[in-house]
Image (tube, rainbow, N blue to C red; front, side, top):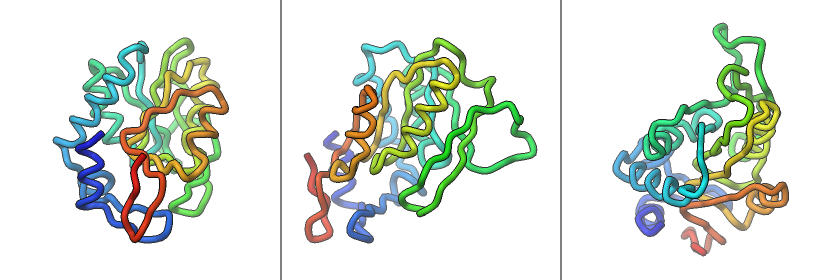
Length: 190
């Protein structure tokens, strides 16, 4: 998606060899107009699939999930929680996922009431790198007896194994910007 790639070039900052900071427009401060464009593109890419629900893991994917829900006709949004809460039921689906950027494992949970058997669930996230979060969330969807309708990603670091891991499990992956490498602190797009 050209508008996203242009924004990454202008405002994205490479902070380590494999880390791109996009907090000024994606995952700390949100550019609402850009999110609307991204959600419309995701809805177009998945126009051939009936999506019943959008799912993500807190917190980076929540904004995208909400915008995509709007673009898909306001389907329900569910997000997996990383932390325990006094209001979270014990009746949950769960999976352990490893966060590349945080360098630790999380047990993510979704209340069983919020994913139903037979639904097609679109999984969205801000980044795809190693694919562990996506694989964990796909496991939760399948524990519920639902189907993964696909993955929609804002930025994919295609030099990391996330896409191949998800595709090897039979999942469809659509990314709005695919970075093949970083050269001289600049992303190189596919």
